[in-house]
Image (cartoon, rainbow, N blue to C red; front, side):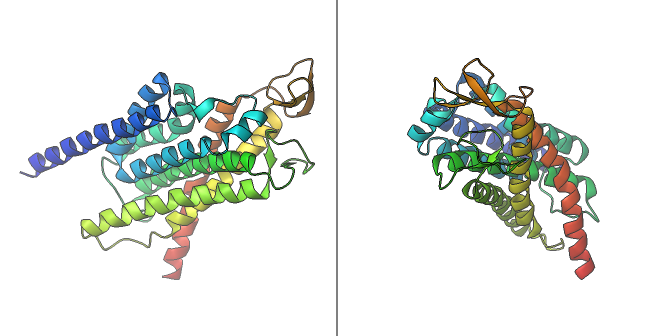
Length: 302
């Protein structure tokens, strides 16, 4: 009887995973946020994340919807500044993988080691689940925070950005350039992911009438720190391993060396996709350690 009930729940979860992924992707294609390859990749990523844990789904959905919206924010300004600007910010499968690849791989590990379903963060009693969950949360917070920072920071320029490694002023659009507005946006973007994850988890725990678990409010702090730390990783990689030069002909910052480009910072080793992927990976590694000490602190206080 229990096995039949479990099978029924899995079928419902699978149906919801497919339907929700298709709805989000259809929205992305309609808004020209995804091309065909990006749509196919997004269906796969969305299904894995949703089927494994609804908290992963809500985090992914929030990142996708807000980043798609912000990509179109003041696009006429960004078109004049960004070397690789795309009308509507249309993402292909590479961009989907670089932003969603790390959490998708972690979600597969989650299903293999933990199972399918939602679990409260509890390092003392559910260590593996807690590590993988905070890693996925951190990865999405990184991607969302970095996207918010770049999209808002580029569109709203109150003062010249400074290079994160030297704090010298650089042109808008320089890889590794940071501003107060961009940094604040990265923190806010990561916090939004933490809030959505927290609300989803607490709602599920309430519906299931599960009451014995540690306080989950640090999830919001994990999102906040993940957004800031992810943006920091992205800026450091961009300033050192990603080329930035100012083209005297095109009158904008470019990402590839050329005879008409004056070098600003970085080396032509990584492109923007690789920087996004590595930043997501580094944040997913760092956040479980930070989470461990946060929840350990709660345990010590109790």
